[in-house]
Image (tube, rainbow over all chains, first blue to last red):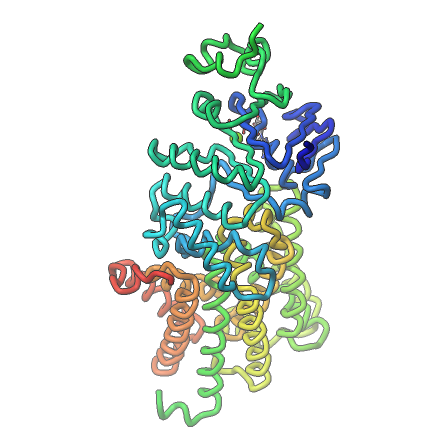
Length: 251
Length: 274
Ligand SMILES: Nc1ncnc2c1ncn2[C@@H]1O[C@H](COP(=O)(O)OP(=O)(O)OP(=O)(O)O)[C@@H](O)[C@H]1O
Ligand SMILES: [Mg+2]
């Protein structure tokens, strides 16, 4: 049984102002993948997601997203970025912001439709922030805001979900709920999850990659101890307490 | 004031003030929430180059300003987005170049232009019917475009990266917004002059923002405040024989400062969406 390839990177390299950030990345993501990406700070995880989204142009290599260029293929992607820099006083409610996820579906010059409003309602419900829909976005707590941004990504009805540390400021019960939501969503879409929380994601994801300029990935949930040590430049025991044996290759 | 309205110039002035309020109420909100105050200041001051060009070519200075301001806005847009120079640096440079060009053009034109001061500092009392027609057309275009692209402009102002990902033509819309800012500047030149345009682009919107967190309501409130400011300033200038542009700005500034002491209206902060 073959699964459709949704993203394909071939020999991709990227640099900012001449400083290499990614080198020789080869990566295929399939329709039913739930891929976790770990790696040290500055390892290039965010940059990799941005290359898939066409927000950063690779210096070399080929990127295809749903068989097309990133610019054309990204309409099938839901994205939650790591940081959202916006003005706390910005005049928009939670509802307005989540609805923005529907822009691509609605199209220019049109008003939001009934479907758009229903999808927004469902996403707010799923993230349990329906009660805050009228609240100004900047006045939410960090975690509530993060939920709103996740809802905004879900409302696009994506076939691939790119999540850049989505649970960094979400409380533990919500985190558990969120991973359970991902468990359900993965029936319908591919998911790529960037996280530093190795112990938690190794429970949920079924493939794991480690990125530090180079990508260590075997289309499986296992990495060799040497690879982790190379990526993090420290002994495996220090990377996460008691976790690595779940993802480490047996010798 | 009421009896003053029997004069055509007063009726024109009042109409011009209301049209200016519509343009600056709508576009000013984007300028304020998208943090485009500095680039708008650059565009409005650079428009002086167009006024000079108008004198030099012997056409209406406002027509010169129209084309020159749009060009200046687009140049600033391209330079700030493409060149690897800090945005405020490049705006500062283009701002000064625009004004310098105006001074050179005026210097090259024989004789001293009699109504130069009215372009620099505005004189709402000498607005002609032709001016009003032009202002009406520009204000109508602004309203039309913003109604059509309201949700896109909202997403562009809030989060360009996400808007790009969901397929909004962010760059294109940003340049369109700059053109609308240029339109607004041209509308406002007659009312408060190139030097003071930036005040009307920011103060009504900034005042409105204190009372609502819904962009549409903010725009309507800003139009209301703008109307109060222009007509209040006009009245002051008529009664006390003050320069109209400066009077309008002072009324605006004082109202804004006063609004800082008024706590947010409880009614308006909690309006939700259904
Ligand atoms: N816009 C930028 N301009 C210049 N350099 C950048 C830019 N964005 C990232 N970098 C550099 O690229 C490298 C990779 O950054 P990236 O944000 O992809 O890392 P990351 O793996 O997401 O890190 P973190 O775990 O901290 O989120 C870093 O060394 C960073 O300094
Ligand atoms: Mg990152």
